[in-house]
Length: 172
Ligand code: GDP
Ligand code: MG
Image 1 (cartoon, rainbow, N blue to C red):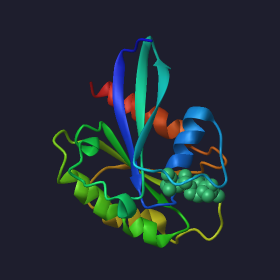
Image 2: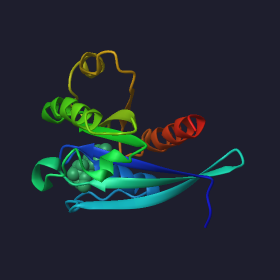
Image 3: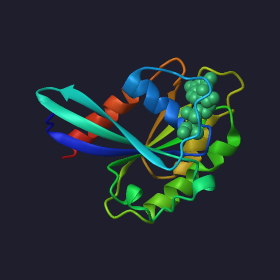
Image 4: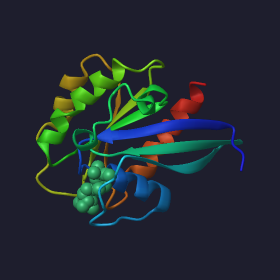
């Protein structure tokens, strides 16, 4: 199997926000209700054909930071091309952790990765109020992409990864 571009994508975020579910939806198009907790690190690959080029995404899943203590100085962040920071649109606590992830990774990475902020579980009721404004406030001058997804229903999941792959390819 050959490819023209290989990009390393890393998903981070609080436990339970849906990182593993987003990867399973994107790569295998499945949704499991009670997925088991990710232990340590794992990755899946997905190939995307764009124009006449094949782009391979190597998508890394991380376990809950607080439980397994993957330090921000870990090589997984250092050589990431893109870091997707996921929070749960119905759980304000997970949004308040986004800032720590941004700062921790920014302060430790050698090659500035592209960042995307993902609010997952858009299919549920009782969403955090004014979430767009809250994201804008915490991003300050940073121009990160913000996308709302549902791993359960598949909303925006392909779009999220495709847009990232396209942007990475264009930046080459
Ligand atoms: P992780 O700890 O970030 O990897 O989160 P998981 O992918 O294990 O998901 C945690 C729980 O949230 C599981 O019970 C999932 O079924 C559920 N979940 C994940 N994504 C969604 C979603 O988009 N909508 C809903 N309703 N539940 C979700
Ligand atoms: Mg997981």
